[in-house]
Picture 1 (cartoon, rainbow, N blue to C red):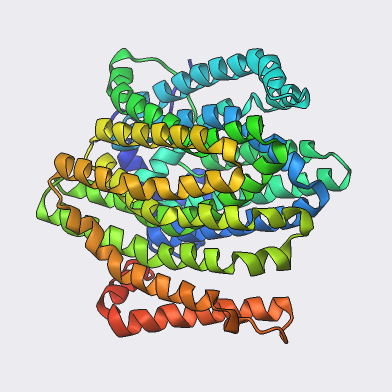
Picture 2: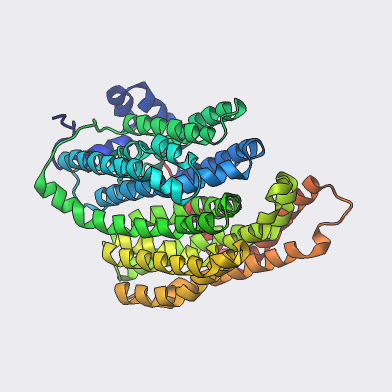
Amino acid sequence: MIESTLRPNAADSIAGRFSAGAEQPRRYGRCAGILARIPVLSPIVWLTSERVTQQALSLLLFAVLAPILGPRPYGLFAIVMIFVGFCELILLEGAVEALVTLKNLDHLHTTVANLTNCLVALVFGLTMSALAPIIAVALHDVEIRKLIWALAPLPVLSTLSAVPISVLRRSLKYKQLAIRSILGLTIGGAFGIVLAMEGAGVWALVGQVMAQRVAELVIAWIAVPVRFGVAWSGRHFHELRPVALNVFTARMMSLVTGQFPRLVLGFTLGTTDVGLFALGGRFHEIIVQTMVVPGTAVGRIELRGAPIGSAEFQHDFVRMVQNACFLSFPFFLGTAALAPSLFHLWLNQQWQAGIVPAQLIVLSGVPMVLFYSFDAALLAGNLSSIFRKFANLQGLTVAATVLCAAPFGLTATCLALAVRPWVLLPVFVIMFRSATNIPGRSALLPCMHSLIGAVSMAGVLSFPLVHPSWMNSALGFALQVIMGIVIYFAYLYCFARAEFRLLLSAVLIRAR
């Protein structure tokens, strides 16, 4: 049995040692010393920087690989990741949230989490491998079987990162998390590009994700004052289990929300349409990960300081929702308005059929900002059972929507998926109010200024006169982007100046 170096009930205090800049290089080596010398910024700034850089690198990799590989390899990879990513993410998030939620985290919690994660992830990997031939036959492509076998180790690699990720999140050390993600993606991307240029096809994407996960695992454990270990304690396992199971179930349904449409579309319409759908989902994911997740993830930790339903909790919740809307709404609506120009400028003819589906998928993200905010508040208030109910309702409605709309084609499916969250929003507002005693207007009113400004900006960008024929496409697109920024910030300056100043105060450099 390998023991952790953490003393009992000391994980939080040791995580706090990250702030001791002089001690860290001496105890944890040269790599930790390099991390300590990077400027100290607001957690939101670091998390946003991580997500922006990560999505920018992913987009750059797609720009390089898409012309080489085409839609079919991306469709194949997306279908395989329905199964592999499902196992990978639900296990990781369940373990991380359980460790973050605990009030007192000690060394046996971390070692029990490592042991449990390894065993469960191994079972999932073996189960996927056994079912791979059946999945390949059902989806009419024998290559899927080999891809699943190759990617089966991913759940184990990912879940072993749960302990360092949770320790870093508990102490709001998003600098280390940012470095881990950026370096991992860079290493994996370089590996994938080399394989693609050598004609590896879809296997370039497999090599990319495997190299990325290995790099992220190594970097995560280097970045924390915790030595890897495995051990068993029934008491500690029972303390972790309730939150882990609720988050496990919720993330499972969340992945249904994201992955089930690909599976149904792959079965009814083929891998090319799955590739087009995945591209639209990629734009949506970029905005969510860069503009929504940073504020709600940090807010989820900061909200733990006040009792749920209290005036302080409600005040912090309103500020979190307001900031998330100010940042994300112009990106959702602006991307939808600029999608035709972007597709014609960037992608060749085989991708043009994805313009309207991409616009619809991106627009579906506007009400999802509130859903992410609700999730953060529920987890902060230790209401993981309500969080699970929200996720279950999301997953069930997505599954029903796709099954009903898929026979009518890709565009009809994307339209139905875009309407679904707006129909569901009143139900979620009522459920959230019942669980937290926070009035629905506290969630909805902070969104209005940013929604009006974003709609006004998108309307101007969609007007034919803003892209005259005498411009080349690159110059026209750049001018449209600049015009959108000017319009939105002019609106904020005129009608929401005080709220905008509060947003800026949340992301200023933190004093040492």
